[in-house]
Image 1 (cartoon, protein in one colour):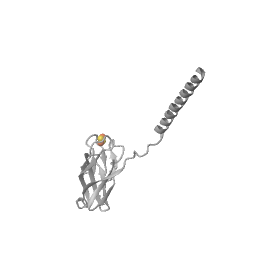
Image 2 (tube, rainbow, N blue to C red):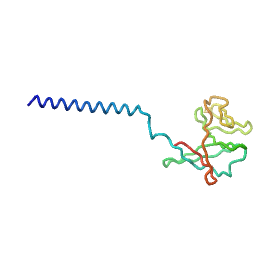
Image 3 (cartoon, rainbow, N blue to C red):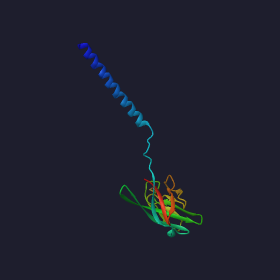
Length: 150
Ligand code: FES
């Protein structure tokens, strides 16, 4: 009788350890698998009426986004040409300062470390390692809507 109980306890412990081992193994597998469903989605926010976009030149604008009840304001530039326009984020690709537009030189300049960008947003001088971010836009009922990953 004593041997039967010992055998039962032994097998129960083996079973328990096997279950713990399996759950640990699958936990490791899950942590190594590529994450799904955590990609940021593109949300659209109104920037300004289409009629306020200049036919040519650069206009600074404030983009207000509201995500999960939190309102954020960001600076963007609309760069217009006869071919259309682009919307550029004003956040410098170096360390995140906000760039300004220099009308005389027709370029964007970062006040922090002297980074410079041309009108397409391409980094042309200084430490910025990448261009300014070009934001997607679409026109909806006469309003320029800008896409931001949230
Ligand atoms: Fe813009 Fe450094 S943050 S050049």
